[in-house]
Amino acid sequence: MNYSIDYGRPAYSPEVMFKLLFLKMLYNLSDERVIQEAQVNMAYKYFLNLDPEDPLMHPSSLTKFRKLRLNQEEILEELLHEVVSQAIEKGFIQSRTLIMDATHTRSQYAVKTPIKILREVSKTMRKQLYRYAPELKGLVPPKLPSTASLEEEITDTQELIQFSSQSSRQNINIQKATEKALNLLKNETYQTILSLSDPEAKMGYKSKTEAFAGYKSHVAITEERLITAIEVTTGEVMESI
Image (tube, rainbow, N blue to C red):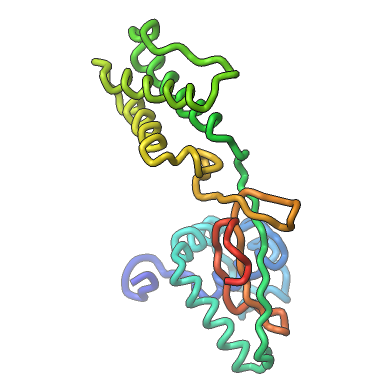
């Protein structure tokens, strides 16, 4: 029902939308820019199978198509399979050899030690307590010095959790900060994650001496340099998957 001729406003062609996204990625254009180019560039119009006078959609429609229609892994896999099938059918792919490669993507967040992660959750708890329960400010366990050890930070976080849980003044923001700290301690997550903002990022190595925190995009490429498969993993996964 996503593209029904009987219900709702007339839909734009999914094929045209997909081709526009292809041009956007190929030439590194924004949604607004690729629509502007496609309005006046006859080569674009020919690729889109449109007449010179045919209008194009508003750039926001292209944005919504990308975010709301192409947001599922199954759909992207079907599109990739269809593109590869057509390339084979038209003779663009003739080789039977696949080249495996991996691209490294660094996390946009800074890597933090377990001590810094615990300090961050403790700081958040104190901030929420000060803001939503100001009458308790003088009773909140004091902040530790920057020279505190990991064991001291663990104890401090435990004391804050206990204080927050037993305080008479409850607030959803205080509860969320407390639960986050409790989960970190309960599962010892603070020992394994690199960032609270990006907990899935893992440490990987581009070489024996160069490390990075983030992810890997594993790509299968034919001799004609056409991608036939892609898998995104955390950074520590070997490139031979």
